[in-house]
Length: 265
Length: 321
Image (cartoon, rainbow over all chains, first blue to last red; front, side, top):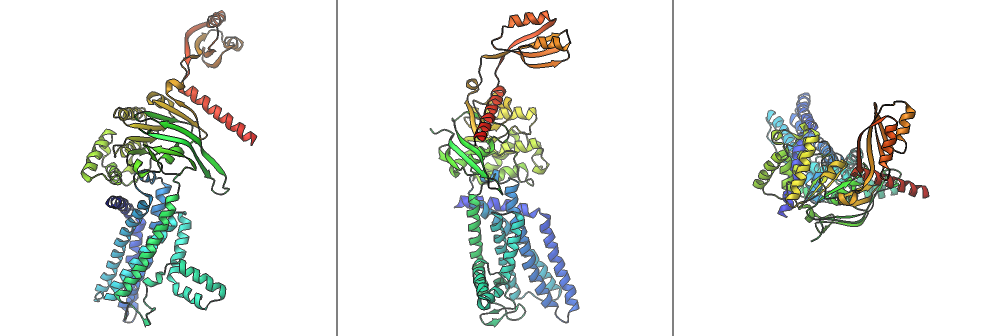
């Protein structure tokens, strides 16, 4: 078990190093900084809504840009290993293929965690600039966005284990978009036409409920939640995180099974 | 003790992407590699050399047949602990230095940090990359990458070393260094299995050779078993004073492999030719004999013959189909 961890960690560190040299990752970071600067401008244009805008834009940027970064890294880092044949010198060594996939994911998760921390720091600096402290709902919102990003990374790895980057990008973006509108799919499953009901029910089984990670504006346990007033409890955050963890494990398990059967020609 | 490599009726079929047509990359390959020997695997491009090596190393799965490495059925993680592998035209993470590449390899073998550093330093010097120690692999030439690949293949001090085209991309000095390294590995008791299409390199160092073409083994054995030591002809070089075409044609009558460079003709007489009579006739046509030497079969002759046989056999099979 320790040896297995050592091999996974070796791949994770190498993946972290590889991701850290991708300029596009820094491009995503710049977008988040610009989004926060844009929030300052929007805040000035608003009537006493500076803080609300800073929090909404900050959390939105973490969720949106973090997810896009996760999709890009998930598609790029695994596919290029096979395409450039760097994987030949790795899987010919005494490493199991599942260890390789888990190592790649762990490395990506490290990079994404660092990015989310940077994005969060940018938002916190913006809030401090406005003379507002960091509230507990904001911390909870950041944690939920972080888990969402990690789930999206697992979705990208899953598709990348058997498909080309172009198709994987389409599949991953589609699943991410569907995951964000699960309340609408639930409504269709409840109130739609018979055929739509069946389709919506199947979709609900296959699509991770990413909307769980952005509960602001939803009714949770009969109570309207908002990042600005009454937000979810830490119990909710823990439950949503477990839900996300379940999806991550399931997606990686299938990716490992697919990867195990592949020929590396 | 089990052979280092034992391959029995190994087959690998691929399906083309859209039409799903079956392509037979390996068609019932059987051979074994004894421990402690250098085994050269030769064949033209597309013969199935790399497919076989990738199958042995667990990169692709065989369609049927069996193979063992150091007594373990493939794909085997236990065997991979004891095997070093250099892929064809090795691609490595180009942002790493050679030291970092070897460190990564060492981690995957579970080698302790201090030992990894010691082995990496020794191997970098051994393959002649000491001066490029701190350069990223991105700046390496093809030959330097090949050396880095050899170093990572030896990081675990393997019992069996599998090298896919190890001389590819190297200059003559580099090729000699790799040949010397392979011989040195054998002297240390290791088994070396390598593929190449540079026949002189294979002939120079291999204890045994297998020739593969169109996914099938055409011949295998030691160089002395494979290459006939009896003369297959007589090479003659003459200086022809007469330059008229009909005079030259008369000199070349009954010969083969005729080459002309100025007034010098090089040609080959059949092995059973009456050389004295032919030389006398050549002199009558004002030709001066420069040299006469028996020609023995080379590995290249054998290789070309086996490839031609494989092509003819394949064409006949396709014709019947």
